[in-house]
Image 1 (cartoon, one colour):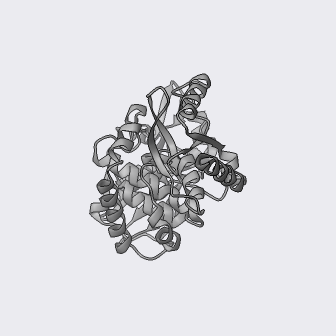
Image 2 (spheres, one colour):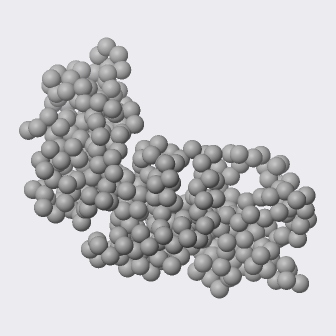
Length: 353
């Protein structure tokens, strides 16, 4: 058994026994882990030695995935952290029929010429995939420097894999593709590093750069190129929503709203549109429909940059300039999208009167 496989086994046993809690050396021995195995896991960065006699798992999912990738590479197998595990590191969301999804085990993709079969071993989910070197990049796992670098799929390939795996409806396919293209552009431009969230001040910078239609066409062209070289598994919804993939969308909530709005007969919304209030001040609208109706999606982080009073002043300024503002929430978009569409239709009628 190689060193990394031994560490994988150790962390898996400790994770099953203690989860995210702390444990002592005696506890680890009772779970079947020897002192030498525990020391090896500490040296690899997979286990934290908090204080004398007390330990805890260190980012167990990521540590196990990195160790598995490096072990496969040592055996001459092309492998990388991928699917939803890579999506979490890039900020590429996965969406189910009722909301965001989480993953129970980290996923490692390996080339078809590898010696291993698909399955779950040592707390890692191994999957065979069509991997190409140009679709991989390097991850330096945050806080796990002792483990070393590991390969990870690029945001574009990650988005495609998540969409193929989770795309069982329009929104579940649109979410990873739209956010993945955005992450791909941010990564290429040096704004984004895997495992490190995009800085708040850079979010709008990325959006502003993506206002250029030529850049969006280039990203979509690159996505199509990748789609043509992978097998056809799970591609039905991915191909179906491709015309509506939109990298200017900044959050999962905005993608949900976009998916609902573009599936209707409403005029096509303009995401992240710049509008001007009666005071002459410029604002950024989540969506602009028909030139006069603004749609704002309100999530839990909506007022992280502004207070509700400032948001009310903003809306009053826009309404004084002749805009109609329609606000909607996550619950409405998921459970009552028809109500939102009817309010928008009424606002369009009044703005044209």
